[in-house]
Length: 565
Ligand code: ARG
Image 1 (cartoon, rainbow, N blue to C red):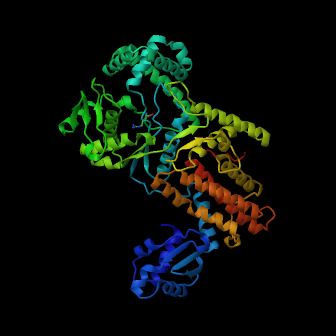
Image 2 (cartoon, rainbow, N blue to C red):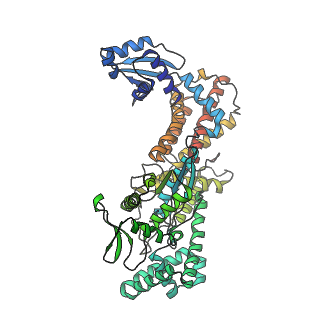
Image 3 (tube, protein in one colour):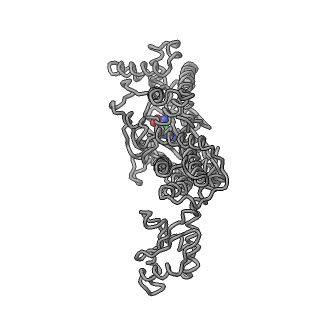
């Protein structure tokens, strides 16, 4: 419960004895428009109790409640009683708290003792780490950061796609046309070539598909040659992926991917058999889910090989045993909705009541203005290339705008990567979006560079104002622009909690964008350098508060906050 909300509840509970504190709290609303106040208490519920019209009641309450140090106006508006926060009290509350907590403002221990697994990225070995993977990678990482900031014990899992029939294909292609040296030099791009060639050839020669299937069988049976080629491919792929993770500043606690479960599936199949869940269907083993309006879940193919779903069943069970999670989150594209519904249902039918603690965090598609990608045809945009391009473009912009900047390369990296992450995190995750260079690198719009630039501007104001936090006279911060900024800073901690509740990183992105905009309005309307000493000091206190909150927000989003740009 937030500070001022609590004050409203206390004031009201003094004059309304007929409702409990809980009831008052629940009834309290936040008006859509702040000119109607910061809180509104609707009096409809009291009409029955007091046998009076709500309009009359709100009027009477407004007369009973006197203005006080927290609210400088408490007024009736029809059936509502509106509360206006006193700007001095707001400034004092927000700025003094940020001065005290610094970069821990908003941090909490609400998650203490709870373990949250966040599975994200989960790229496929031997395949490109392409722009399409950015979504799971980035959204997952931010969710993890949010939980961590709120005191949860988190585990970041990369459920690598390092197993399955496609490896039969990779091995077969390598045996036919591959050269170890060439591949070692440029692993994924070379394997991609092989993969494309394989698909072309397989259209002419059906025997190839059979060959690939045989190699996968060899791999499942643990044949030395198949395993050796597979682990080499896994190794070199991971090296490449890790390069991208390093650029993004992302670390995983576990890389237990699909192959990790290759020896843990038989037990799962046995358990399902024991529970009478399995049925045979054209040689394959399936779980009938018609009762739940879903197609049957195939857990074993006719040729005896296991599949993706079986490995996910084994993975979920292993995770529960190994981590004893409170929540197990899967950050995976919405195309896999059915897969996860089937997975969770089968777990439930197997008798695992923790199935309800598993959740699919879905997101929509990203597309490129250049048109659709196709790994099969080799038409792919590598994420690493996009990041590097963004860094290059940023460097060119810096050369133009601020050629004397120190650490140009480092700043270009921070801003170039930040720009991509920011765009990725700007919308509701379920929404599809088109990747757009114009938008990404704009310094004016609602973009990463804009927010980072605002942060840098605040840093330089603090530096040139020789700001040292001293006694601040909060009563001097009376401008509307100051009040607007203060209110957004005040709301920030609650926004982090809401972002966690809805699992929506964009709440935070929008909040710091809003703070940056309000900061710039404040900066435009309220002179700092030329102000009288006390006023200057109070305004610099607000600059410090805004700068700190922007930095916290960026850091949760996995974005750096350079002090000069
Ligand atoms: N590797 C899969 C893909 O790229 C995503 C894995 C999602 N996670 C899971 N536990 N099934 O499509």
